[in-house]
Image 1: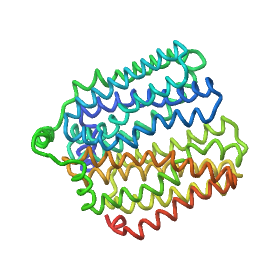
Image 2: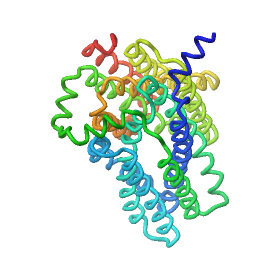
Image 3: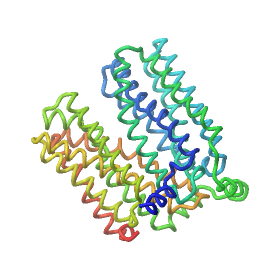
Image 4: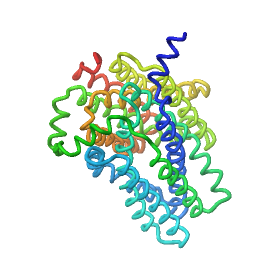
Length: 407
């Protein structure tokens, strides 16, 4: 037992004081992000009454990911990550204050779109730099633990943020809420200067002066690393077919299960609990055969999602299946990030993560496709297309890329 405890402590990122500081402030920032998303969607719909306006709003959040995520990865590799993060959080902070001003002064909604788009540029930079920064504050042996624990905190924030925003919206104006969320973002700016870096910082300094790889060389590196290509390819199935379930869940809850907003909220909460359980498992013990876990979790995600649609008449079974959907989806997502980070060299970590994190843009694209199927053939057909599309597309990719299974 003593040996097991020592082994766990050696691999746990929580033994790092700097990581704990980063984790606590990340929870505050991520909770503010989820509050922000909730308030923005509510505000824009209240102002316009238009679902199309919500689509435009979320497009303003998406487009920077498509166009600038890779360049954000370049920043993570060429410059001091701590300083880049400080600039990113400063831009996010100012952008949120500007949003508060626009809402307080009753500016037209298109000015909100502009402010959200500009702020999203800084948010796009923050994501790959933050993920790459983990390797600068924990040693390589503890990196899988750091990724898992950070993901668990993000899922906790996903539970807390929307609920907190919903309660506060009953008592506080949206403009004041934006100022509260800006204060949450500023937490990281106070913590960052005190975070100590590992010895890898010296290696990074040397690379910054000598490493002249441009984007072409980054793509060449990815092309030559078959495992990285496989990880990027397998993301197509769950991100396009599976993860849009969070967008389509109101449709499934109402049309297939006869649930109201309370039932929809319960399904989301159960999904989040499953996701937290997955990250908790991975934070305690890393699987030896990560490729098999990656494949099986993607397949399980598709199957559980398909069965959730098929067995929509049984309330308890639906909750258990949604718990399994949350568990397998997060198990896939976290294992994918861990496997990728362990494959890539430190010099190219930011750029490769910038490319990998562009898979977030697949989700709204998948939602458009599935929404069109739902409009034409109904919610049941759309849900089955999602679940079993994820399952069979994963099988096809693994058949073409068998190296995934043997990693």
